[in-house]
Image (cartoon, rainbow, N blue to C red; front, top):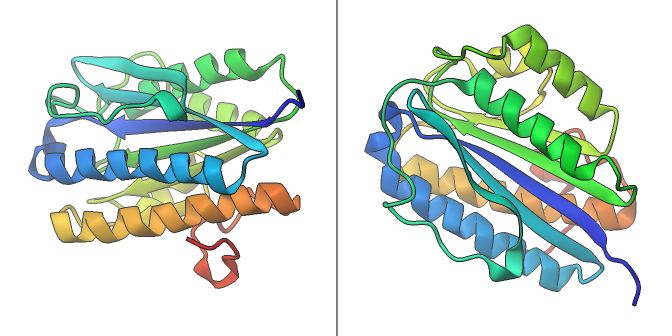
Length: 216
């Protein structure tokens, strides 16, 4: 049996207190992402998708899913996602990226798509600095890794650039804008799989819809 091309979808999700007002929209959006990735496996049968979900706040960083086959995934609910406390974004990124790096180091035919979703800037990390995270992103970007940053309530483009991420999307922290954001994210994710199939550049212009070729 021919080995499928493995795609690792790493989602780093802000669970700080300020996300409480958009908690339900965030849960619904993540569950839609899971359905989208399931659809990607059907549309691109040569690809095998896995999902990792890491949530973070000042109370801790939780790995809720680690490279789970997407076909086995169930939806998350309010029990698993409970916003509270501060925003240790750099710690969440550093720990998650190192763990994923270790998981994929022995592979050759793979891609990693990292999606960071937050409604505020870093304010509580203790183990990783922005400089260390930037170096890690720079290193992994030389491999088959793609980084995206989705944010609200801060200068998203400027902050993401400081950690070497250029694929960005801003949203307003309300249910309606969240829904639109997740719809655009879904289209971009499908286009990403199409680019992998076509052996096109999948690292840049992730949210540029002018060149989308995948049917949704």
